[in-house]
Image (cartoon, rainbow, N blue to C red; front, side, top):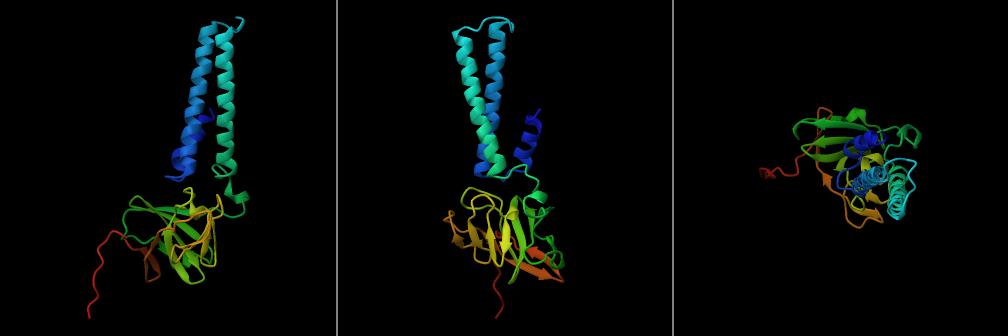
Length: 212
């Protein structure tokens, strides 16, 4: 039964293209293999009173070892990657998440964000974080370049965002790495504010030349 919320977390909560996504897929695959092994052993023995032979013992031992490995993966997902953790008790309130139909739609009103607050916007397949730092409203990619942690789930202090997984920090204006373990900069986006509404510019749109 635990597989049901696990699958929901894997495809609804775990950041895409991250180490946690890979870890979650392995965790699910190993659990499935363990279930197959113990089911096969059950049919092999015939009934619970049958004395296990060498084959049954080896299959049981393999299943227990795999189950231990899978449990370690599950613990890592919860304690290191914070998957399934209730963020009300993890240091801060949970960030908002919105899905936009196109880049032409406003993400939010600038008055919705206080200093240090962030919002995650899914725009045309891209996960964009909109936050308010000391220099104003900014937009940057949600994916940490180290292991793919969600930066929207991190902390924005001044104009630096910290990944919640391993502590990498990035300048949200330039994307540059402030401190590792990350080595590559994050993606940043241009924004426009019209009548208080915050718009993120489509990075794939052709740049128009300004008239002289």
